[in-house]
Structure formats: C-alpha cells, structure tokens
Image (cartoon, rainbow, N blue to C red; front, side, top):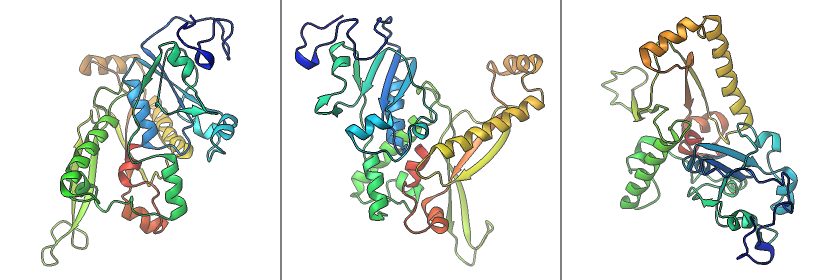
Length: 316
C-alpha cells in the first residue's frame, strides 16, 4: 500500500508503479531479512552487519550491488561482481536492514523501504571500512598491526590509555565470541584458540625449540570435533579475505565430503547411529583454519603486510 503521509520523491509507489519488478506484493514476513551492499574488499565490518541482520529474523538474504551501480554512485570497484558475490545469495522479499547514512545521487536509497515501515538499522563496526583498507595500502601504514593477540585481549597492548585498553579488550573478546556463533548467529559453534610463543630463559629450555615457550589458549568454547570426524588443519595469512580464499576453504570441505562418501559416511545405518548416540547428525570433517599472526605474515610477505591485522583477518 502507498503511504499517504509521505510526500514527493519519498512517497511509496502504488502497486504496479514500483521501479523494479515484480509488481505483485508478496506476503510480508518479519522473519525474512534482506541486507544489501557493495561488499568490496570483504572485511569483518561486512560480516558484522550480516551477523546483526541474521539475528533479526530466521532467514537472511544478501543483495550485492552491481559494478555499474557502484561506479555511477561511488566510483569503480576493486573486486568484480562475481568476486564480491562469492558466498552470498541474492533475491527475496521481507524486512530490509542497513545503515542510516546511505545516500545515492543525493537521495536516501532506502526511502521507499522506510516509507513502507520495513527498515531496521544495524550498526557499523568501528575501526574498519573499505576506505580504511585502501588507505593502509596506499600509505604503507603499519599502525594497525598487532604484536601479541594475547596481550591485546588482556588489555596490555594498544595505543590507548590503560582503562580504554581494557574496554577495547572486552569489546574484542565479545566480538570474537559473536563471530564464532552458528548459522543462526545465536548459538556457540566454532572453537577459537590462540597459539603464542614466549622467550624462555636460555638456561632453562624445557619446551623444545630455541628457548621458546609455546602455549595454546582457548578464547571461545565451541562445539569441538565430534565422534568419527576427521580433523583437518589448513593455514594461511587470509589477508584481504577474497573469493580465492573462500574457494580454497570450499574445496577443502568438498574433498572431505568426498572422502566421507567413500567411507560410507552418509549410509542410512551410519546416519542413524550418529542420531541415536548424539541426537544430531554432522559432517565427516572438522576443519581447523589457522591464521598466521602479523609477525609471521611480515616475515614471509614483507614489512608492509598484512593489510589487516590478526584480529581483523580472524574475524573474516
């Protein structure tokens, strides 16, 4: 229905006069959420917006703007539409979400959605944007790099005063926990660990290596591997998380799925046994993705890398 309270260009078009097809209204569902964006240079700010949106309903649909529309309204993209669409689905009808400051050609691009009362707001993730990432690349900035993830999460490292560092640490730990949730965005899913090494006194080398003490610390408790799953480890820098890296992880899962089929993982008797013993079925592989720390990336790639620090890359 048109909103008679809206005027001018903000007035909701009447059925049959919508700027895009379909012209027939679909049933309204507050559980079906739509979010759209450019999603150029995928980063955890994008993931944070999608996570917030997912928590608003039961189904999330992601729309990706075309190269042509972005060029007209913002300038050329860095990644093509195909690259930006990797891992995203386009289509749907429901409640739309976005930031309040979206404007195209001087007009609010969500004005019709707002006029229909179908707009919800998600908040920007502080400290990260595509513009910021491009700036780091052009200026060869290293201010974003982290020496020790453990020290940052303990509030012991960072440019801010001690009290603010504690606040930032608490926010980061909460963000890591949020991003480790399942597909609903509400329940625990991924384990998150930090591996660190600390110098040992030269006269007391007890842990192997050249005077280094190695330590694993659990940051988030997830589901962990289940009975019968094969644990598979892959690692990398995962800087500027791209369609190629996403495809690599997909290929790992596909290979393990095939290995599972070769071992009769999906046979009815095996599936029933898992359901009887655990109450749920699950896939044959438990994939562990290791993300190299900033120092390791710098060692192998150069002093100007990584473009995104260990926390930013881990959250992607």
